[in-house]
Image (cartoon, rainbow, N blue to C red; front, side, top):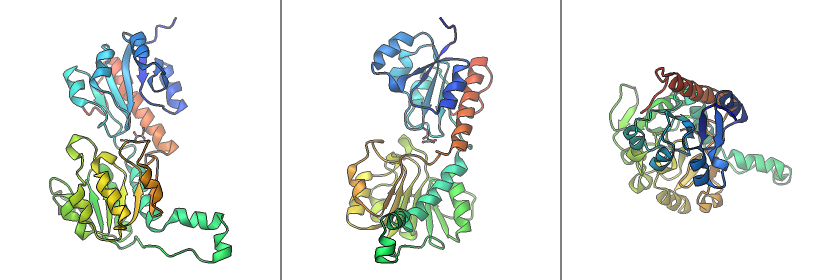
Length: 314
Ligand code: 8YV
């Protein structure tokens, strides 16, 4: 019988994070429990920490089922899947992993822009299928450098995308509620920005405040042939309107890392050859995930020791 306190993992983490957590906790893998209510009942009093992920959070019912929880530590920067009001009401602090993934996600946004516009998946298939030798050069595609970039949300990640895009000679606009002290053109809404850009990239935080922010009006205001990228949350976009635009051929290319209803995404996305699909993987390098895991564990350790939490968000 161990006397280590319990920690609930809501989603799968790399084995090195699980091993590090197991030094101090009995780790309960909620995500793989066949009988979730049964597991919660069995561990009810022992759990002192809940570890969530960007995509898988914690609701009020989970908090109520684990009344000794001292921290909800998110392995990710976005805490939109956690009921923050419920956590506040119960006095449970919430932490996330900002900064350590900013550069990685910004790199990925650029990768999606280039990969979608330059049809990198088709090029790879052209080589592998033998079409290169059989048919000659692959069909031509679209330039990114020098095109006008519009970023929805100029926070840490949006700003890092802008910095990179400057290197591509892209004139930059952003949409945000308030104008910032930056040398980029500001628009109050995505719909206002849409007609002025050739590449439209979503980097806003998820959650109630941005749900449907890229609405049908924004999608209908996009220039024909736009390159559309999303590395934030599917919830920020009216996905029905996006699918309509793709079906009607109004989008030149799209690079999408996030969707409604992940991982069971709308299968219609699979039918568009000009869409580059990724499985919510923008922060998914070993280096960045190790940094995220370390920061998540620092927050958990601080909560256990009663120290200030390094990256508390609520
Ligand atoms: C995930 C993310 O946390 O940081 C976020 O908000 O969505 C991602 O980095 C990551 O996929 C781990 O689940």
